[in-house]
Length: 464
Image 1: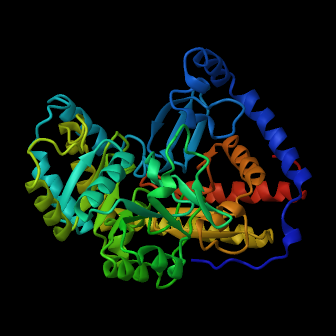
Image 2: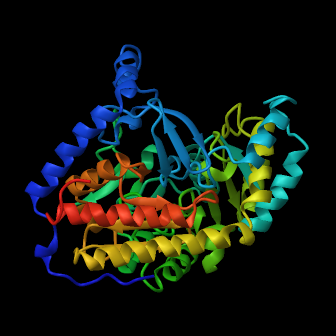
Image 3: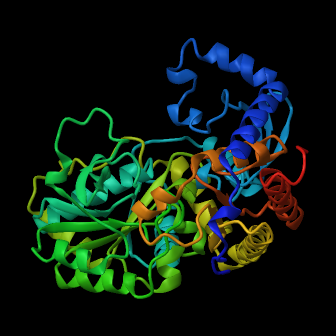
């Protein structure tokens, strides 16, 4: 991947140019989306913050963009405007919106019933496919990755007898309360996103910086941590890559201290057919897979190594049957299994991933060249089909550095500029994801739009 290009700090656009672009693009957004404005006013009567899920206002737009149709990598909004989608539901639609094989499976399976709280024949096939793709032999289905992470934490605590967990500062593992702990001025505190939590979660959640091996070793040395829950690449505040040797050290230290290593691949599944851990040889004790595993319907899975599965079996043998308390009624449904099977068989293959990685490399190279041409103090990073550019010259080594580097005004100005010209990128940071429906023309057009956007931000040309 291209290395960050050293440029002077004064190469960045000034605040006045950023503010002017953002104001102009917000006005343009309002003008081109009257139907979305009308729908926003109507939905505000009955929905919290005017949307079915309050994150939908976090795009920073004057009002939400209402999407009428999503197919492949194309969106059509309520006003009939068309977009090339690089957000893809923030990875939920990693293989495109309603791809034909998935739509066929949905119709076929849906006509045979949706949920029975009993296994369907697909269970045997899906279990074998998961084991083959991701290298762990024992699996469970949940409704979301949040549920999967929550379940794994409970199993880890049960079989180790340890109450504490460890996460990396700036992480995100869904709506799992215990993971909303971060370092602030070197002290563990509740993350700002932890709303309405009366407990002091720092009592049982340890937190260290990603890539800090000495801090990790010190935190695990007392042997009181049930598990480390980690993404192999941090993705919550931009992509933070592991230093050479860090994941090896993470694996070695967790083994030395009897700590279970849980790898959350919900975003890093874009690394390849077996995820990042399989691609790099990282031997996890447990893996969590969410979002795209069933093509975007509510489903996730978590898997265990044989050794951990045996320990769970031993633990359950000591308890009264029927009272595990880990699971939900709609988990493992026939419709989930049918769609997971179709996704694994169709898209989680080396043949399916190869062209995605090649096109992502084209996007990475194009963005890097654009950044260099405009002498911006920025850099670009890619992992598999996932590409991200960050508005800082050096790659952050941890979540704190990454969060500090985010420049919200620039991000919002670029996001509005691109959206108003038919390109959608992830709102929370500058992530672009390639799917099978993405074309080279889509990539080249997006790079060209970024080029004109930066030209305008640098004050070299009027608005397009």
